[in-house]
Image (cartoon, rainbow, N blue to C red; front, side):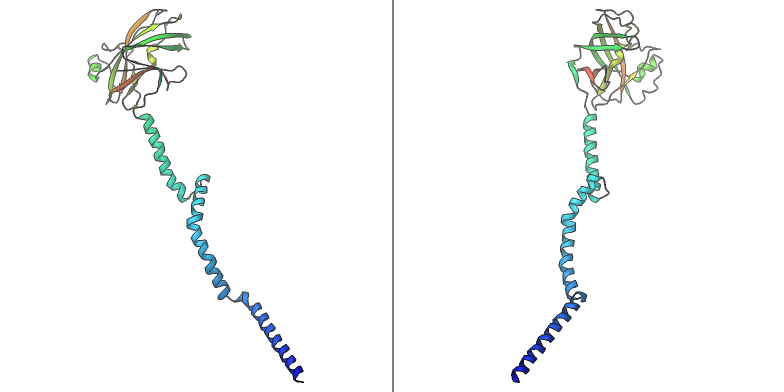
Length: 248
C-alpha cells in the first residue's frame, strides 16, 4: 500500500509539474516584461549604433551617386562647385591657348588662310611687328566714335603679311584672324574703323596681293586695360585654337 501511495504521489507531482510548465510556456510569449523588454533592449541598441555609424555612410554615398537629396551630396556639391570654379579660373586666368608655332614679336610664322566667300585658300607668312597701347583720345582726335571703348584700352597690332600661295588675296581680310590676349587670359575685341581709318593704326589693303607679294598694316584690338600677353592667329576649323602666337 505504501508503495502504491508513493507511486501515486510521484505521478501527481509529475503531473502538476508538467501542468505548471505548460502553463508557463503558454503565458511566456504574451508576457510584455521579460521577453519583449530584454529582446528590445538587446536588439534596439545595435540598430541605433549601426545606423548612424555604419549605415549612414553607405546610404549617403548611394544617395549621392543616385542623385538623391542626402547630407552627403549636399556636402559634395560645394566641393565640386569649388573644384569646377578652380578649373575654370585656371583656364581663364592667364591661360593663352597653346599654338602650333610660338615665336617672339618681330619673327614670322607660316599659317593657313581660307575665305569661303571668295573661295580663296592659301598659306601666309605673318610677322607681328609690334604691339602698342593707344588711347581714346586718338579716336576723338580723328573724329571717330569711341562707343564701346569706355573703360577699355585700344591696342595697335602692326603686322606684315606675305602671300605664299598661288591664290590672290583680293576681297579677303587675312588680318581679321589676328587675336590678342591680355595677362588675365581674356580675349580682346576687334575694333572696326574701316569707314574712317585711324591714322595711327590702319589696316592693310589686300586687293591684288598675289603670290610672293606682301603688305604691311595695323589692326586695333581693345582690352579691359591689362597688359597684352600674346597675339595669335586663329585656327581654320576652331577659332578657340591658335596656329601661331607672338609674345614680347
